[in-house]
Length: 148
Ligand code: DQA
Image 1 (cartoon, rainbow, N blue to C red):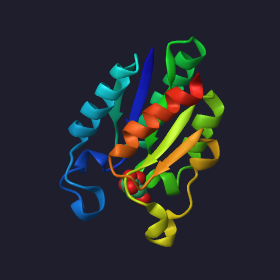
Image 2 (image 1 turned 90 degrees about the vertical axis):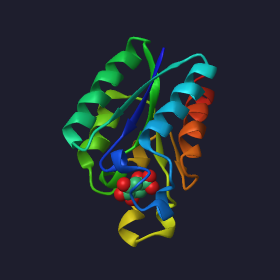
Image 3 (image 1 turned 180 degrees about the vertical axis):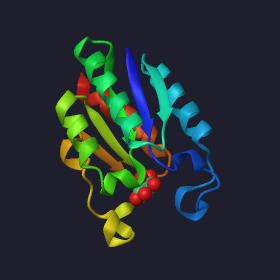
Image 4 (image 1 turned 45 degrees about the vertical axis):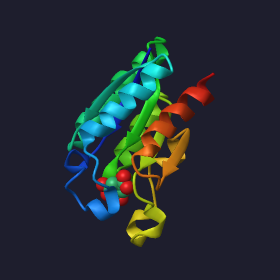
């Protein structure tokens, strides 16, 4: 049974991008943490990052289908800046019924006002915000807990 770990635009730059906000860990570190956490709970993490909205939508659709078939539990998703702009990602999650935990490394509510609104939160099962990369581990644990 799989858990999708999905990261959107610019998260490939983790480790070098604004480290005072996002920390020193890289996306590979995030993937290792998610792989380890999922395995410890009896699941297999599938880690994917894209800078392209359409590729994220395709992945959500594929996992929505897998969820219906009993092959995937859900997704942990950091949509990056698309959080604040993408009706298409909102519709994709709503349309395919994939359980999603939304993650943000930084506390978006303590930042610029354009980061305060999320198009993803209304269709997410839950959110984890502002806890650094620990948020990914907590989101996986939360997804498993609410799915049982
Ligand atoms: C982010 C917050 C977003 O506002 C920003 O555009 C990102 C990262 C976070 O993890 O804190 O790219 O999603």
